[in-house]
Structure formats: C-alpha cells, structure tokens
Length: 323
Image 1 (cartoon, one colour):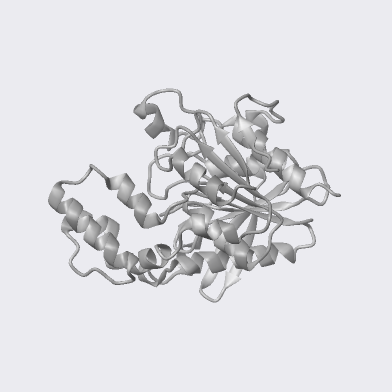
Image 2 (cartoon, rainbow, N blue to C red):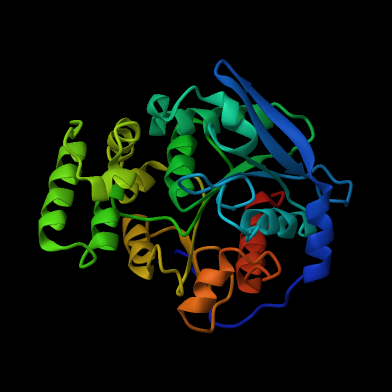
C-alpha cells in the first residue's frame, strides 16, 4: 500500500535556520573529470562522523548553478545550497554541481550548440558512479529540481540508486509545458508561429525561420538541445524506475503547477508524495502577492520551506536505514 507524506501539518523541525547557514559554509570542492572538461561541484558532509548516505542534487533548466541561482541574475536564492545544508543536519551528505556551460563548469562545453539533453544525463550517471566508488558513503540517492527531475530520472534508469526524489518536476513533455506557459501571452499570429516551431522541434526538425520575438527561446544554437529534450516525457519515463520514489511539489509554484504532481502520482501510484503548502518554485514560503514571489528568487535570507526539509529527510532516513 502506498504511503503518502502529507504536508498538512508542520512536523517538528530538526534544525534551525542559523545552523543551516553555518553548515552551508562547510562546502568541500569535488570534481568530475570528463573528456569535455572538468565539472565542478560542492560536497557537504554531515558532522556526526558516521559513514553517511549521499544525495546527488541536479539543478533546473537554463543557467542555473549548483546553488539554485540563475547566473547573470542580480541576487541569489541559494535554494539548493540550503537544501544540501538541511540534509547534512539530518546526517545525509550531498553533492551538487554546476552543469556544463554554467559557472564553475563553463569550460566543459565548447558551445551551446554542442549540448544535448543526454549530455546532462550522462554527466549525472558519471557522478553516481563516482559517488558509488567513494568509500566514504554508504549509498547513493539522486534528487532533481525542475528540469533536473527528468535528468535524474533518466540517470537512475541507467545507474541504479537507493532512491529518486523529484522536486518541482514536470510530468508532461517540455514542449507541452512551454505551450501551457505561453498560452494567452502571445498575439494570434505569433502564437501560430510558436506552435509551428514547437511541432517542428517535437518532430525532430530544425525550424529555420524563427520570428525575432521568439529567438531568445528558439535561437539556432539551442534548437538541437530542445529537440533532444522534447524526446522524453517524464510521466512515461518514471514508470521505468524500480527504486523508492518521493515526489515533492509546492502549491505556490508559478512555474510547475500541482497538476504535474498529480500526473506523476497517477503514472507511479506506489511513489511517496509531499505537497508543501505555500512553497514556490525556489522552495521558499510565499504568503503574499506576485511581488513577494519574484523577490524570493533573489533573496538568500528567505529560509527554505521547513516542511520540505522535514519531509525529505524523513524519507531519506527511512530508505537508508539498516534493515
């Protein structure tokens, strides 16, 4: 019988914000060497001296760094850094890293046109293997945020892990998610062109006449990546996993709505789920208007949603406990 973790009430929090902030300063450098260059990451080890499990954390789409921040955007939210620190307080190690082409791993890709979705998946597989071979750890789990949810899902199909965690992960094909996000936001003629482009990319074909207004989304150099990404649909891929699964979603997320969580749960009914009240896409509590939503993306002083940390760490302790 599937156990679902409900976030209706706040469970006792096992850490405080100041402790998390201090733990986040304990980052150790860790590097994945690849033929394309070095991929740089951060390791946080718990302070209890016990051989811990480790969670590989994969960031979301675009120029998102290992800490959950958008490179080039003024201000930081530090969401993934805080998440890693909260796990350390619960006795779980973590590794988070800059994707190829981003921040510390900027030199690991020659150009945007060289990237494919599978490139990121193979990097995640290589990280899992590296951590499995590290005698400091008792087991490896993988966690993906947003687009990273699908990357982690595909990596876990290739290299078995102790558990898979999706945080704000879409269930639908990325092309359909993009359609939903743009619905009603484009003038009719541009909406028609947008659909032509998406349909072409989903069919595996480059679109050569992108309107100026849409080139930031569908520039020539990014189209091969989009084609490779659109090849996968999360609600179809998740059924291929046999490890324990936790699906996490906030009900104040303006980028990935709760319908995505429901669809993933329908595809994988035995998975555990955690719906965090008032949590947004960068894992912070939002009780105000859109102004607060947007400011949370660049406010490192806004703490992580407590129910997220408590629910995640409870799941990890249960899945890693010795039988």
